Image 1 (cartoon, chains in turn orange, purple):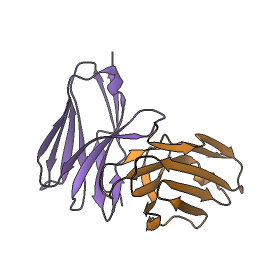
Image 2 (tube, helix red, strand yellow; image 1 turned 60 degrees about the vertical axis):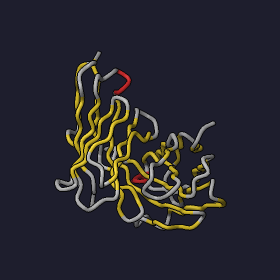
Image 3 (cartoon, helix red, strand yellow; image 1 turned 60 degrees about the horizontal axis):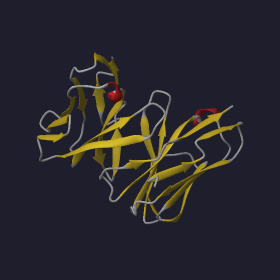
Image 4 (spheres, chains in turn cyan, red; image 1 turned 180 degrees about the vertical axis):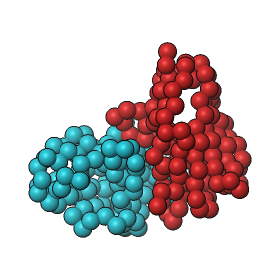
Length: 112
Length: 109
């Protein structure tokens, strides 16, 4: 019954590794997002997709690559992880942009 | 740059008291939303107020919007321990929501 789910919940990895975070929503929403929340709780949008098409890319390094195989899934792949990538990453979805968003539980990424 | 800024950054009150949080923003908006985040959890949508609305209620929540001052407030009445969380305002700008840094609310029993 979970509306927006993310896996894994925790991810601990070393610098230089490549990792992926998966997100799925069962709300039938057309738009999905990835956010990054830093240690000061500042939440910043990274990407948004509408019906599998990228509509927002917020000056995120090329090491981050979102992939949307269908409108219910939006995965985030990160290459060559750096210490500064440590944060909590949230997936979210909404029926339309600017409408209320439904957030996943977050993935806490720790890069050592 | 950041669109919404919440004030205060932290607020601690006794259970049963009312809590008021403020949000200021910089550009014109279509709507403003408030979200709650419990520790270690994702954000939960609380209420959306459109730019042509001045006040909105939802249970113990009351939100006001003053577009001339570019500000909004969230009032939680008769606070409970379960209201302890961080509260964020978010404004829509160019097909995205921009979040403030939040107000950390602590309700003391």
